[in-house]
Image (cartoon, rainbow, N blue to C red):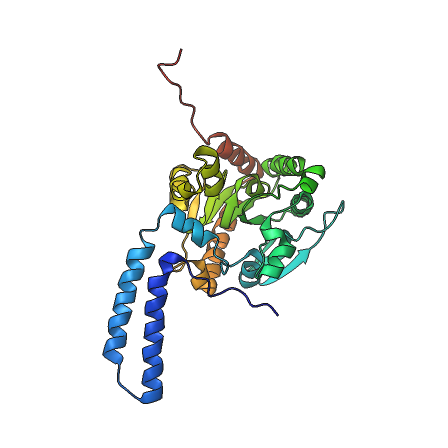
Amino acid sequence: MEEKNTRYILNFEKPLIELENKIQELKNLTEKEGIDLKEEIESLKERLKSLEEKTFTNLTPWQRVQLARHPARPKTLTLVESIFDEWLELHGDRLCSDDQAIVAGFGKIENHKVAWMGHQKGESIKENLTRNFGMAHPEGYRKAKRIMTLAEKFHLPIISFIDTPGAYPGIEAEERGQAEAIASNLEKMSQLKTPILVIIIGEGGSGGALGIGVGDKVLMLENAIYSVISPEGCAAILWKDQSKVEEAASALKLTAKDLLKLKIIDGIIPEPRGGAHRNVEETANNIKRAILREIESLKSLPLEELLLRRKNKYRSMGKLRSDENAK
């Protein structure tokens, strides 16, 4: 059985991991040899705490991209299993097949019955191939639309978890109507007569994210990203130079703080220090609290007001700027 990649280390994490390993070595030495190394251990812990503070309070946009893509970052099904008291996954779009890059179903969180959906990346290399790295085909978006329709019918709020580099760009996806499937979902979600809560948990890539990403409230995990294009794609188009990815990440304004400032999202869900992969349970609890808070608020709104707010939310995005010197 292939193991999950839980020890993947990012470059900026290496000094922290080295300190953590040193602390563990001293603890092991204390247990085995009976040597009192308490002062040394406490000193290293203070150094580690200080280094963590310095590292994770000053992350660059590119470093946040790396955290959003971390192989051990919790995926949709991991979060569903942790957050929901009961849940059931449904399969297939009733037209073509079951796309495993998008998972969807129904569940219960405390006293709230909800529908849920989300992109699903793999927990291993083998599963990533099966899940197509979270890049959905048209049937994945049509499966999601089927769940949306059922949610509307039974007056259930919808929770959508976003985590994809983008929709699958292969020729077979285009042949089966990728653009139409995403556009149809945009139309459906903009008019759906039930509350929709969107949570970006990892990568929010372009139309692949928007295909299940129109909501009354859009939240992001602290180190998630949301952008019209990847930094690599942006660097290739604008500079034709992959060494410009860090500059591209900064220019794209793809971090949660940037997007909240631009009013593209409505809130940020905190992550454990070091990223969601460092403490999945704490991450899930933070998301659960946000879901309960937002669902209570959205369910209290009259339907007409809910739909009007959703329409105004998206119509108010962006600003028209005219050049006074233009002829």
